[in-house]
Amino acid sequence: MSKLTQLKKGSAELLVLSLTEVRARHGYEISKRIALESDGELRFNAASLYPLLYRLEKRGWIEGRWVEKAGQRRRRYYRATAAGRKVLREQRGVWNTFVASVNRIIGADYA
Image (cartoon, rainbow, N blue to C red):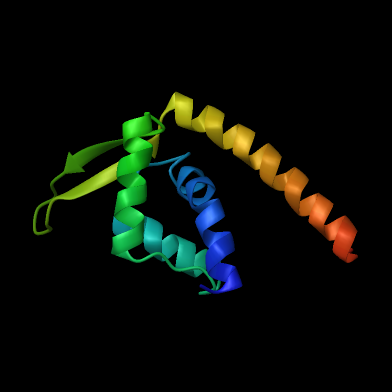
């Protein structure tokens, strides 16, 4: 397992909650946004993304609903719930503290 893969696993919930905070997205769109916004450094395949979506839904952090559009197949759209947005705020705080701490230690200065 690559070092980037290990970091990705630890941040997967944060990524999904962030992308579903403002609007509902279907699984394929979530996967594509992660790849696009990370310049291809982070990728989630269906085998890892959908179990994560199901776990987050079971915890009540996201809610899914089926949507049918003419000429398209039925898709499940996910959106962060109030509980999920609360968890997201907490995880963002932890993540920001972690990144700042690591940057201080390794000498990264982006100012």
